[in-house]
Image (cartoon, rainbow, N blue to C red):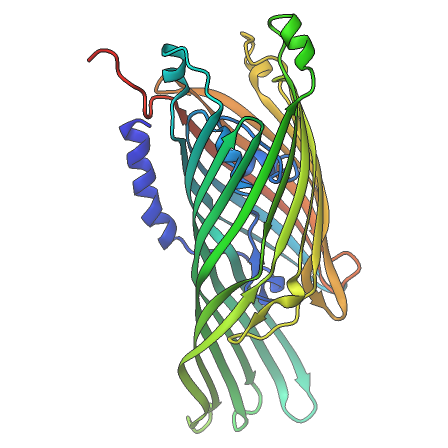
Length: 438
């Protein structure tokens, strides 16, 4: 990678850590918040094909085995803007928010250019990646008021903010048609909840101020495997110039993982008439533990040469095993089904639009959160474009896309969202190259 790209990577890492995770949905109140999608943009625009999707110039951390196919250094960064509308049957509220999605750097341990110079055929490859991204998001601010018979107007405010991040070290190794990979990650972050009840017409009544903020830390891991087979090998052997048709089958999984919490809780009753404050509870440095669920995913992707790809993905997680001493919650098991792919007319064409990736996909699944006895569902469609451009004499891509979805159909709260995503994948094939001349 060039000095400019490497410097950009180092510059953005601390800025990412300082960025405020943002959202505006009461559904983030549950668990440790809204769990982020590990699929990078190029896969997210295809619905999410992370279990089996492989590209030698793009990063896939959902199944780390894919890094075994990496042929060039890749630096990937993305941002999003989301417009969402909440509807409880009587009231509607809209919000607009955005933030950084992820920063990732991955590279192969060997350079294919060296193999060409040395006329070497390699049967194995090793790739490694570093990624920083949100793991969960908490963000909501709900205000309501009502008139009680004896107390007059009562105002309630519920808010939450913060979330968790993860730093991942990903490794993938490929030998012939089989790849295996491992993600090792560190989870960290802070979450804050507040609840205020104020009696506006009765200043002699004691209002309630409650706050719970806690930090999270722990380790994450998952393994992945991918098997690739060429379906038209006979035609390739008999006729030159034919592109291989490849089928990838992928599997990824992890067991339950634990995390630690450290909480500070304060519960005050306040009299606005006399100024008296009654401390009901004030506790700090409360140690606790939690459990994140085991998850498994399986998928298959078919590649028709370089023109198209189409795949399916299925995953499940046992969120019923989730625990959190700092914020106890009962969640439900989940599943997700995905379908998607891309079409690229001709990557060698002089026409720019023939070299663009046209991505499409859809997904359906449910959510670990249960509202008034109904488990939240989540479904939607995705569209995207991989727009090629030249940066420092290398072909790279801008990834532009849109996700349209809905959560909670049939539940007491329905959320409709439009998420615009934009990112860059920079590629560089000069890492680890053996210089013949200086």
